[in-house]
Length: 324
Length: 253
Ligand SMILES: Nc1ncnc2c1ncn2[C@@H]1O[C@H](COP(=O)(O)OP(=O)(O)O)[C@@H](O)[C@H]1O
Ligand SMILES: [Mg+2]
Image (cartoon, rainbow over all chains, first blue to last red; front, side):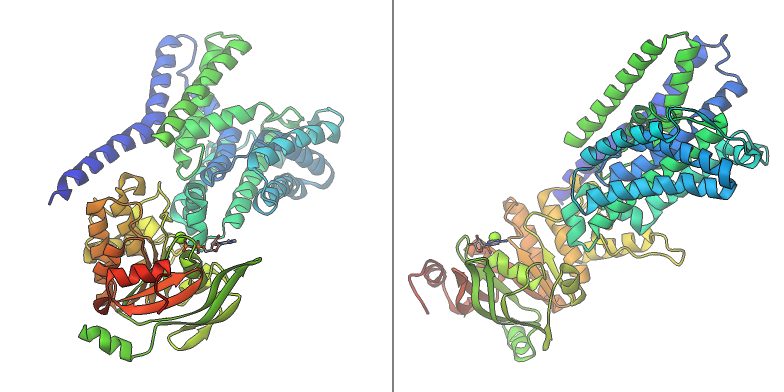
């Protein structure tokens, strides 16, 4: 049994990597939490109100991150999510004010789905790189959301909508937490426990292997981008609900935060491996960081620099893992 | 030897008749005919560019033949996709390992054909149990069904690829240079696994560049030169010299 040795070695290196890569986000989360808890103990960081605020504020980012886990796991990228949010929030707001709740919600989600469909079709069937396609739609949608209402903000004056997607609560738990929980649970289930989830991972891991195994690779690529577009649409609704208004600027700066949350959460940039729970924790970590840096009194530009450095570190770790 | 004679007396699992394949102006395969019987290993040899890989791709549904017929267990079939070939019980093990590196062994085993529970969720328990059983039967030595492919050696990976093919193929396994990327010890292990396929009464058509390997493993040898079938020999009744002469064209028949 000369194999026993090599097997043991393989098992050891296997265990080592699992520890390192899968739990890095949890260590990071705890470390940042402890850091702020100590440094900001007199600034209200540890209050229930502040902590729950962090969760509520990160709801749209978490939901976009779930979509991006699917996209990145399939080996693609969606840069258009941030500007999709502005378009879907405006579409929802305008439609609600004219045609009511159901039409408004459908308009928001439908706009997201349609954007995802266009991105997906270009990637899956025209066979353009998703990086270029979604970079183009990012710019295009930024223009669309600006022209939709001439840069004006649109108030949302629908009580039920605001309750459902914004400040309301159910069984004592805020709506935004419900949406986060539902999206994370459903996302995790689909990602980990269904054939579709397995096919997404296989596609991102080795598209040729997936293809010769009978997986419809173009349809997987189309579907992940549609999921991402629709979830960005849901994020748009949550922004509109929480702020009781929609504006073209919504979501505009979220792209970097979402990508960071997903990568820090253990999803590989090049596909084949990822985690929905990791993305949730990554997103909460980004929210906590944002909150803590503000409480520490950092200027907006310093906050951006610190966040950028953290993303850089996350990307470096992720790529090192891939090229090991 | 006896077993093979009996097998040969039955119906071939694969029968190729007058297969031709043109790529634009190039004739890659010309009037190729061959039969493979259950429980038999047939080696396909020939120089680079002789058309071996093209032939494998025709049988596995990747390329449609320009002319000729493919018969599976007496039934004439048209194979327009790899999925279709698979549904006929034909599996291919690719030279460059069509495995998803970052997934587990058991997920690779069931790639594209994952079983689900009544709730429609992945039936991991079944995948793991089936994988462990097969890996044990074929004596593919991997740490566990949960191991990630990239943590395995080249030989272990090829073992997984062959185990996967064995799990799904009930008629024919095509091997395109299964040991081209492997070291000596790993090659020996993979050869052992290929040898054990005979007991499963599956037909094996194998491309190999190593004549030593061909003589160790095969029951018959089919020589291909510039897309044409030069001849088929029983391995026990031929010599390396004869095969080399056929490959290089120093001997026509
Ligand atoms: N997809 C293709 N398009 C055009 N020519 C091809 C294609 N595939 C193979 N050929 C040609 O067919 C011939 C046989 O190639 P191949 O089957 O790969 O040979 P072998 O595997 O025996 O080395 C070569 O001349 C090769 O250039
Ligand atoms: Mg070849």
